[in-house]
Image 1 (cartoon, one colour):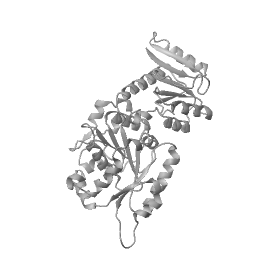
Image 2 (cartoon, helix red, strand yellow):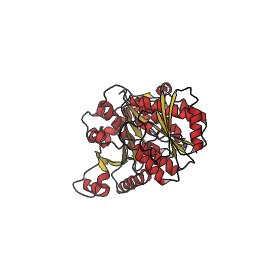
Image 3 (cartoon, rainbow, N blue to C red):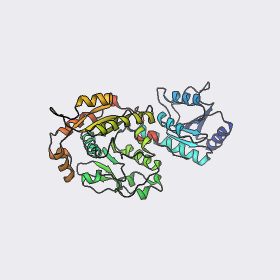
Image 4 (cartoon, rainbow, N blue to C red):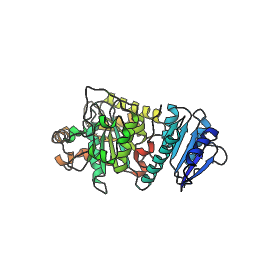
Length: 396
């Protein structure tokens, strides 16, 4: 028997839930308690397949009680939040709480059943898998070399993987993306095919739309459209990344410089976020501003770190030194990657890893300790895999 827990004090929602689930012929064990924060609702049922929580967006105390409830130790069921009205600020807070999905009233019985079934099924599959490590890289300025570092980071993580086909590189720069070009492979992601109905994207279709490099690295990339500025439904991007993170141990995301409606969602779902800067004063200033902006937008989300690319230490003369970077960026500085343009250019021209040009190169040597997985440094708590932590229906 499937157990469903409901927290609400609204008779209308309680009536909808009871009429929907109690018509299941005794297959659903339904428990209904009062609203979040009232006596008797101080814990979630760890044995429940899903918990439905009625949320009043205007009640800050209720939201605080819900956040405290979901942060309690022990097994927690996936949570479906029911909002009385769509509120972007509340949705952002729900993302930080790691709700599995949310619905906006009025809710139809079939919509409620389908959402709960999908969430319960996704949660059950996730519990059988280990957590995906998601590393996201975004540029502080144009031309900082984020694509090169994203590719090399994915290859480093793939080297340390325990199984084959465990690492995926995702190029989310749909306008100017260059991951496929750098690796000399054909991009296979057909955005026109999946954009109208993101739910059509399943494991089989994902495999068809995945490119494979000779090194064994899987690459999700669409043909770039430099003269076509487009925005995409956040649900499409989130569903794509959710599926990718369900089948790979390591996911490296190459982000565009432009901030889209789905950018917050991707950053919140990442274990680690790196801002890639070049070795110039304007770039360092912009990287510092970007660190602050992400902190302000995402609150308790990921703690972004800055990688300064093409670093050169000058003994004499003008130029930034590492001490200048440390002073400007403080604890936000992850490290530096030295400049070696010759081998990078040759690797790009040949479509091969840098290590194939020179096995013991200083770029890979500097990048390896920055991106290798350290669980204690991960910013997202373990327990659920990848972007499934943020799989939301972006209702409006």
